[in-house]
Each structure stands twice: as C-alpha cells, then as structure tokens.
Length: 183
Image 1 (spheres, one colour):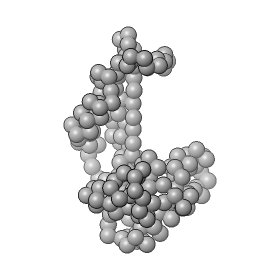
Image 2: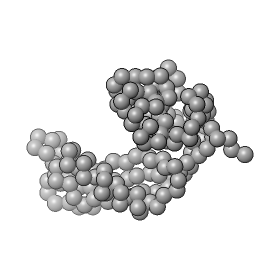
Image 3: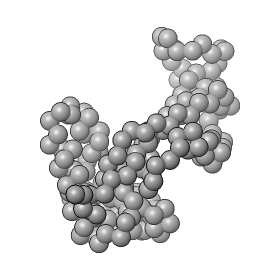
C-alpha cells in the first residue's frame, strides 16, 4: 500500500519545435542532416520540459493550452519571426517528484515540511542509486539535488533571488498548488 508521502502523479514530456530567422550577427550553423529543409536565413529551434499534473490530462488539450497561453509570450520575447510550430505532449510516466531546471517539484497534498523533505530524500536516493541509469541520466535527473546542502526555497518564485529554507512554499508555489525544492 502506498503512503501519502509516496503518492505519484502523472508527468508529461512537452516538446516544442519551430523555425525562426537568424538574427543579425548571430552565429549561423549548418542544418542537421535529415532535418526538414527551410528557406534561406531560417533554422530549426526547439525546447522541452517535463510537467507534473495532479490528475491525468489529455495530451492534445495540454498542447493546445501551451499553444494559446505559453507560446505567444515566449515567441514574442525571444524569437525572430517564428513559424512552423509543433507541440507534442506525451505521458512520460508517474513519479513522486518532477525535475525542473536545478529544481524539483511535486503537488502539494498537505504534507508537513519534514514529510516533504523526507519524500524528496527518498526520491534522490532512488535516482542516485539506480544502477540501471547511466551517470549522465542520474546527474541529469538530479541536477545537483544529491548535494543536500544546496536544497533551498525562495521568497518570491525566483530561485536565484532571496533564498529560504527548503521546501519552497513561496506565493508562486502556493498559487500553483506545488511544493518545490531548488538546488
């Protein structure tokens, strides 16, 4: 029987791909062999991340939400004439914690700080000592979390800003229904 501290949630892998124009002075590189051809002055770009949800979701609906809500802000601020957008969302699996960029998060189910830290400790040990994973897979999944002294929260949703003790329960995390450990 699973204890509340070991509750798992669905994790989805999001893959976003688009073409864009080279910016003036930007270093240009040749197209990858086998990539779809593009007009002169354009190249393929992409990003991706994992996303934990409280309940199972429809991947097509999630992709539509990303297209409507995330993509307009991201593309307007960062990209040069983006086009040819594709968004793929697939269920990666279920786990207790989801990795972010030098952070991990889980759904806030009302555990105490000590219970959250214990749960994260078990997650880190499970990944760190999973000998079926290569060193790079382990390191990529942990991103420094194996160094417990790095664990912290933040005051305002900015992990690079003012640090607080782990776990993070800043207003941004609370609004999102998450609890996070930055590292």
